[in-house]
Amino acid sequence: MNYLFQCNPTTWFLSALLQLFLIAPIFIYIYYKKKVLGLYAIMSAIIISMFASITPYAIFGIKPYLLIWDHESIKSYFQSKKWFHTTPNIYATSFFIGISFGILMRRRFFLSRTQEFFILILSIALISIAYLWNDSFYRLDKSAPLSSVILWFSIGKLLFSTGFSWILFALCSGRGGEYRRFFSRDIRCVENSIYFSFFSL
Image 1 (cartoon, helix red, strand yellow):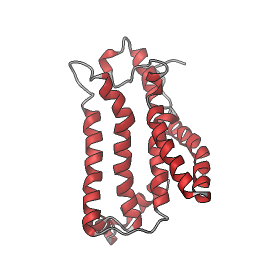
Image 2 (cartoon, helix red, strand yellow):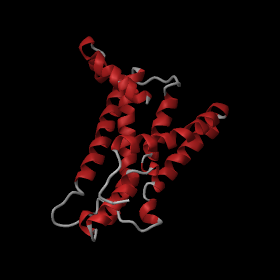
Image 3 (cartoon, one colour):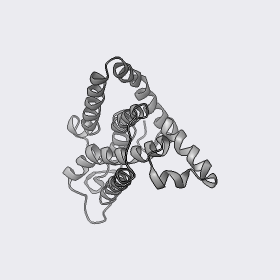
Image 4 (cartoon, helix red, strand yellow):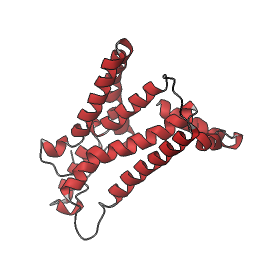
């Protein structure tokens, strides 16, 4: 395959998700049979997924594409991007974080308005940290440190997924406080439906 010809973004994303959807029922079944064992299984899957996201480098020695200036050629860069951007293991952490928040949808627990507010602020902070961390890799003078890039692929995605999932979870379960009430107004009903549909997916 010519390295300059990239996959159709829509189809490769759907194919990656499909492979993850095939294994999701296993974890959900374990949880509904034995909740404690199911929680351990999901937490273990999240930890394994964090490592799986860096396996192209850890096992095959392929440098992440975010190390822009360290690639010897355009071919090397695009091959790295395929490994770190189009394979299911890259999305596994976000996927299992989503499963864990999906399980919370069926559990009854209550938070005070103060707790809701601080968790919302924490979620926005986690998303911002992950975003700014990623933005720091695009430099014109030299590549970012390898350790920072590897940590972003493992921990940075975890931070972003957790923050983003909580906001969607709060909007869908009535725990978003003023943020939820803003999106629940009639004028915002379309956006509210979109958020709910996105979380359901």
